[in-house]
Length: 97
Image (cartoon, rainbow, N blue to C red; front, top):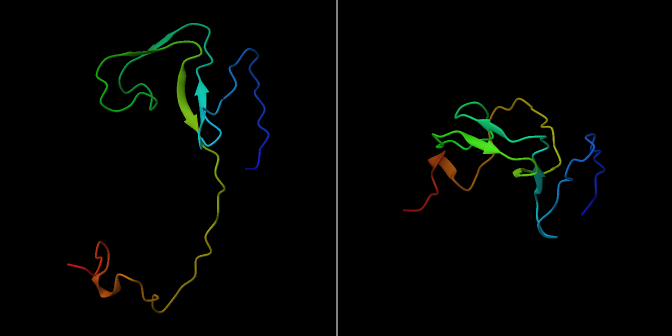
């Protein structure tokens, strides 16, 4: 695994941690002075389905960070597409019954 240096700017912040050596995501912690209560729809961090306000406390684990390589596509125009395992069945077709 390659380590990518990431600087933390906030003094006293809890650094992200990996729960295990095999973890793909690093746990991120709330860097707050005091608890903050958010109502449904105020942020994307509150999972859909919560109907009551949620309080986030200082130092609480709130998310995970996964760093992955990003690739760009090279788009080209074609007269036809290559054959695939799905064949003429198209999208959603496995070719088996």
